[in-house]
Length: 75
Image (cartoon, rainbow, N blue to C red; front, side):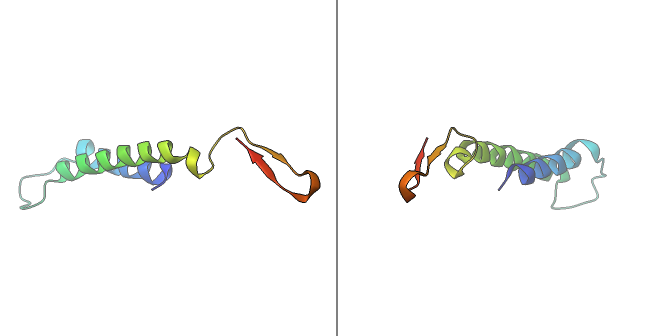
């Protein structure tokens, strides 16, 4: 899950939690709880994306040396 997906889930969860007012006519589904769960999933997904960003490439100090046909990558 990327940062964009995490932000989308958080935004949808916040809308469901804070912006929607419902009557208690629905049985079985609490829209506010669904919103809270989506917000938590969005935050956790964003944290994991940021933690693993460096291992997938991300931003880092890389230098490449292409002398002699061999490629040496240093971090």
